[in-house]
Length: 632
Image: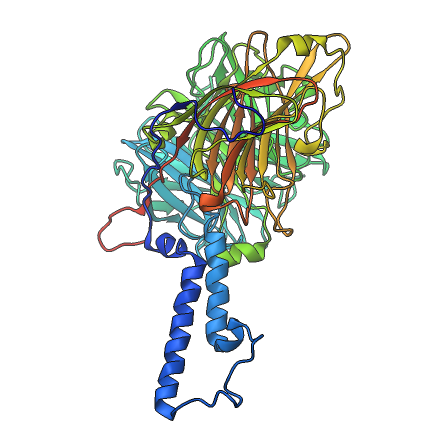
């Protein structure tokens, strides 16, 4: 049993070893301590000074050449070298923020995932990309392939903005694999005036496993904004599916009367001419513009994924939209009428845009696809930056994608989805791990966990509540809410308790991820899962929020969480993935070997026992595909 003042070592040690990481030359150079660069610069200056001395004779140390006692080193350095040192120090500091096992290109801006699919042994991912800068603009479709959705090869761009109808950007789109094997893409093109036009492209050779060549349809655009829809309020076509009448359907994000978000339905028989349905699939007042709409089935009895063709009595349908005004991804569970192309929520109070979210942190513009290879539905989204754009320009890149997640209906509650990192990410785990069992966390305790490097981790943790203390508490924080609370420093009777990641030794920087229990006078309780960024960085220019929401904890269940820690991103999954919170953080002290891990219990009236398994995570492969005569 560990006390709150004792440094804790693993109770069960599994010969922890830090996994090897693949380092590119750029990353290797950026990892050299700034001090070494400064020393090198100093040696250079001294060498130059000595060369000058040998050329001109002895320096008169009683004249103006001798530096005074309060002269700093930088005052001795030529201005050009001084600027080099400043740039080296800045780049070395921000290079730490790059992820090791999340998907991101080597440089520049990335955002929405597009057209994910499995084809001839390869997973294909297309994504919005700016090849010229680390900020939004010149949106092109990047293209990468993988055997496992973790390790990737980059391919040449799939589509670039080179026609009048997409000259301002090849925007979000979706892939459809037709019965004859042909693969098509529907996407939104931004025209010169930023009008949003729907376009068609297709794989030149669908029998090519790499799908290297894509051709835009000569008759583009195939759809213009319909009457009554703003020319900038018409975007993001979904994957097509075939209806019972044999025609194909797709949905589009839009809004009408300025505030009513909706999903429009289009039908087609030939993929070049579409007919708009008289009524939208669904609309919700006061939700604003819907982007990146998605509709897909989930089983009410099994945990396997479903294709859109899989309908029946044990199926519910998820409708999802990305809210352009609040930048959140909302979903609702309901029923779909395939004859009339209408969707109805099970719970109108939790309708799309006013109820449940995929992720209560930093996560947006998501898209699912059915992985026929493994019979699962997989979710991708992009995780944006919360630092100033000038910082993104300095580091030369911005944004990344989440670890892909399987997504199913929670067949126990029936009222929420379950998201979980795909199994393949576990191949990056170190073979040996640290394990801590039954670590007692008394009220007000903070316990360090000595595991070595703590910047690339996969953490599985359970927390066992003292049931007698819980039952004896009559009422506690009935009105609690993660986002309006004081964060992890706000002490309640039954919370917060959890894990502190990416902290320095003194916790001047830290990211607590935790549970908080609120209890009503009728004896019922409600658990919240939160992440507190308020002290995650000493940098005052970056955004910091307290994220989170409630999570169902059923009778007999222990509180549990899984955390994927990867430098500047932390993905948190509570109760097996019922609630998910993703954070972006920018430590200045808690980096590399200085990053530490803690357990804590800041509650005033409850004790908790924590058990954890902690794996170090290796770096994923992100390399150009070895094509003859091409490099990224």
